[in-house]
Length: 77
Length: 324
Image (cartoon, rainbow over all chains, first blue to last red; front, side, top):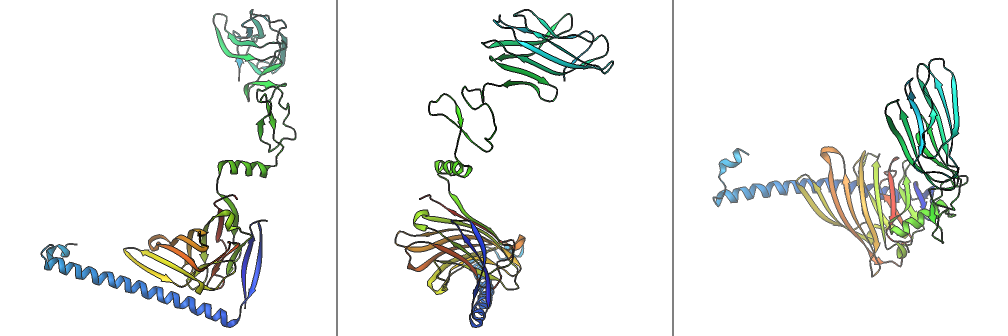
């Protein structure tokens, strides 16, 4: 498969369209990698959000337990 | 525009005597009969001379006045309006020898110098053939002269003197593509490159673009440490790749990166990214490094992991920080 690129020669300022041949396997591999990275990114964001949620809940419970914050406070937040 | 009515005259006087009196010429139009008239003459030292008489009826519209200093020395010239009782000074100028004081309604009073250029002696007396040229003081430090350098040489000289960073390449992508190569670089001379990139990803997959040096497009030869901030959430990761710019599917990304070879020869980049738009805007901060050393930075490639993910309208500007 041909992939299209631009080549810029900074000495001459010339910009030209160029093509590179990659195998179908390579193309497929890159696509799968990109898809995998996208999935991983989404999973990581979900995990990070959940981690934050759990940590925040635990922190609140600890502070209430320690008597530093009243439970009623969070009802108003 | 100077307008005279039936009680006003226009006069000229010098503030000192002259060896040779100054010449003048005036033209005007009378509104009473639409007739064109003129007057010419010379000054009379410190005695008032009428430049233009008052009209017998209607108004007299002054269209042109030229006062030429024919003397060999400068003179202070005073132009006055006289209403029969009072005199009001319209203009007072020092007119250098061989210069003219010209009045037109559109430009007002202008000193025209035939002999001089930018009020310095011995400078070119015409702009002909000097389009785009800069002027410099001549080696004798007595006058200005046109530079014989080309525009680009002048721009280069100014930039060198100012020690500014230099733009080495600028690309606007006209049709979707997968990579942009910058060739002909010399990192040993430039020390640092600065890349500004704003990209559109027109594909239906989100896509990272990697930065590859000297044709090494194997992602496993690079590592990138990433900090990602989205709302109140953040995450940090190290990736075994050369990520530089990211754009979600059918979305946009921006990256500002400093790219360099460290003193021991390791290729590195440090990038700040903006992703997405409006309420979805996100921040990425990336520090990257190649695992092996390089001798120089001779080329850089920005390559999307998805084909044609560098969409039309994407823009790249590459600067070098140093002039070797």
